[in-house]
Image 1 (tube, one colour):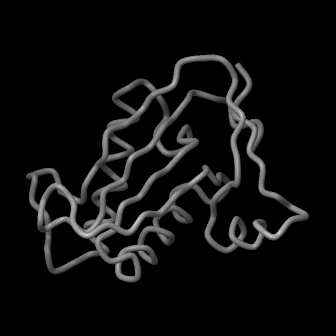
Image 2: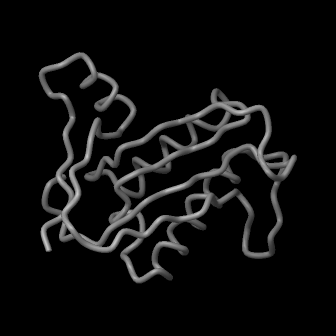
Length: 141
């Protein structure tokens, strides 16, 4: 099955955002199963959330997303086509998230919306990441 086809608005004003914040402007999906992942917070393997380290919460949330997507039978972050990140303080957690996304999937830019919120389900949480993923062979990136 061919993979999702990503668009970056190459000749338009939105391209700057795509280039500098590592995300696509749109995605066209082939017919096939789609995995929708519940929001994943920054808890570690012991369900501990480090309230003193937002970057660690971001890393843990990224690892949790990867694990859940893999458990659904996909390859992890490389099969993610849509990201929604919720931040209690975007200026605190967004740089760490951008760094993690660039590190994990440097050649792949899913569509992405980052949302600032007053609070998340757990009062100690600074980030929650929700994704949608579909198996593909990497074509269309």
